[in-house]
Length: 262
Image 1 (cartoon, rainbow, N blue to C red):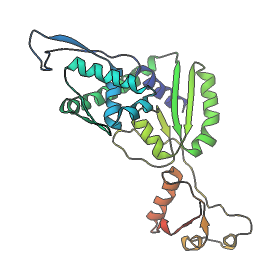
Image 2: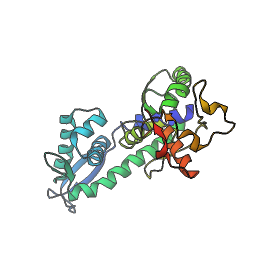
Image 3: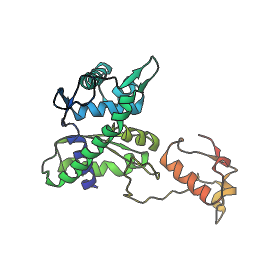
Image 4: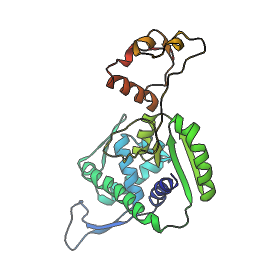
């Protein structure tokens, strides 16, 4: 677990360094042989562009990136001025990618993936870690698993400030995809082409009943037995609830038959 935390931190830390791309372009944005001007493109700008494109608005991107909206706008304008073309079509409700923006988007995404892979390869040469580690955890991990692990991690890497947010699986996935979180720990199985997912622990779900409940007298409790009583469940989007519902479906039961009280 310590090793995983270390690797993910390196990805976040090096991502803040600047990556420059120099290209010779004409003032109309087309490549011209032997003339033109030099464009300095930073990884920070590409990251902001990618976030605006995926979130669909400057304000949403600013919130995810922990920047002011004017700062996000300024970086996008700098990119547009450098390339000599608009990257977004702006409206009062939403921003949409222009033709140039659609051309740039896959390259911006590739640069982010390349930076992460570079950090992964170089992490074994790094001796001293410093900075901030932002992670998301579902309730089980956040309340019962991570506190003792993060305590030991903090002693081993005292120069790293750890920020942990407890939220449900769906929120964690969205924040990792938008680069708001370095990584997440959840209970539910996920399948997304832009996420690398690895199992780290095994857990078990059990039915909890109050003392004196009629079902306690049964040697085996069937699904039909519990549908007659109110259930207390996690909210939709919770990994725990998702695991339970998928298992019920796998066994041929309809989770909607449960009487959810809260």
